Image 1: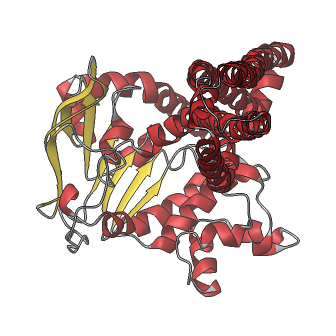
Image 2: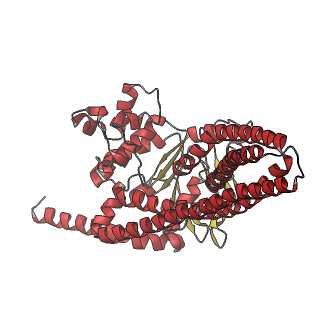
Length: 481
């Protein structure tokens, strides 16, 4: 967007003054020409249509080349953004792909250079042709003027008149040529306008309804009715999802990788909209709720924690701008991150770096949890909220999360059995539907999808913990304890 807008700004800023001055010159010159000799004026203007034809050809050529050039520049910028970002540069180094990425950039850069040179050269022959045609006009006037003088068809015609007409014709061609050049530049800028408006004119699919409702979201049932969703029509993700989370309850969502667990919860704050079916809160369709009101009442902790390049305090206050230091410190204590922050030389004014580069994964996630605690939402969504935490940190935060979940309608996506077992009910997403739902014991008894997940994900851990416990008992017995 920046590149395209800069490309058209010079054309727009210089267009008005250029048009006004050239049109004024054109009009006054035409008046003078027709006043002296309308015949010679018409002969001199015969060349003007010949100037228009090449300008149309060049304009269309530059339109095409500019579109291609900026498309290639987008690809080049994408390579820069991906490979020089924190995560991208780390990935390049780990897999030793520096040379490959460098060669890839050089290739794209050469393509941009070639297209840019073609665009610059496309106007060169245009200027040559324009110069040729502008020299034809005076020759025709001298030829016709001489003929009229010899024949004596126009007594008022003199050598001085012919000379003055040639001077005026040359003065006429300059603004015409300038306006045609301006037309070529404007046609070129239309390619950039097309790209800009192609983006700006894309429909906003998720927007707040007019006069949206602002219902009470606290402890209200969340109900999914025959929900269907897909990113691509040929690959349906959710085909018929129906379930109800009672107000104030905590439900866990499990399922195979790629089954759509995160998509299910993302439909509540309308990060996506359902293709068909409805999601309601307290009987009100989320599409009918004011979007700002809806999202203010929902707290989300994601697996991929994002922090802005600023201080710890700035990132925390993103949840609540007017939060007092007492509120911020209380939230951080609950998220077991306060002591770490205070151990830093600058405390809450510590810079976290780009995407939280200066913090560990666990520290970023605890900061993210503190941010949601500070927001104090009515509905809580935890998407692998403790995935980056070690056992000690998770144990410290789990109590805070459980306290936070009390009195709130909560949906938790988790792979850790300890988190799942504490849920009021477990929903199993598989095959685009809620394949199973119930408590841990009920789902195990079904011998279905959940039991397969349980056996593959949790059985090894449980067997290890059981064996460790038995070994401890044997040691205690041997020691006479």
